[in-house]
Length: 262
Image (tube, rainbow, N blue to C red):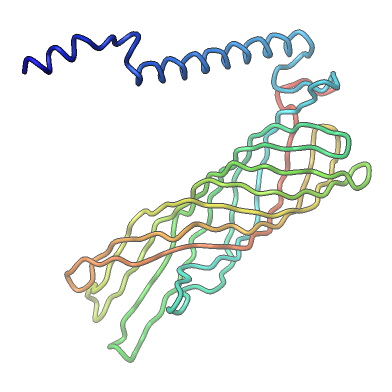
């Protein structure tokens, strides 16, 4: 006890504690970054009539945007090596939105955005007369994803661009397994699962004006393998589940939505 007390008294928390020094260094870096951000914000305000969008100077030409997405998923549910795929290919509706920033360049632009989307349920139902007319349903419901994307736009002609890129984030759904026999539930699972998700793709953009763009694109989207829990014949069990899809999406973006159009 005496040694412990003596050692604590010899540690200078404000000077010698290494953990505090690391936090102090990180704090100084964060404050410096915030200071530079504030300075840049003031400069942007002085040069432009909008902080979010500044295309009046060639030094820092950027445009804030909002977008809406609708499209079709051609999804695959529970593709596990060694087992038959539960739903090999099913068409679903998907919709969502984006918020991002476009940085213009001589031959196109870079777009950095946050995207959120929902997906219609994907489901397979089988009635098997060989096992007493068992009614089996396997589904993924309430599908969602949140992604951070980077897209590169390449100008082809005056109003038409090609783009390619991808993103990473998270995705999930409610994994459902239900099997009944003679009106009695034998297997049941209804659990929300989520994991790392990624996507990649490209498409064609039509720039209707300086403020409106419409694009038609393809993406491959995938959520990594997950494990869900259920109850089978009174005993708990686990099973693997995953989701992947080829997607055809129509997106409408509005640049500078909070700035008076000129």
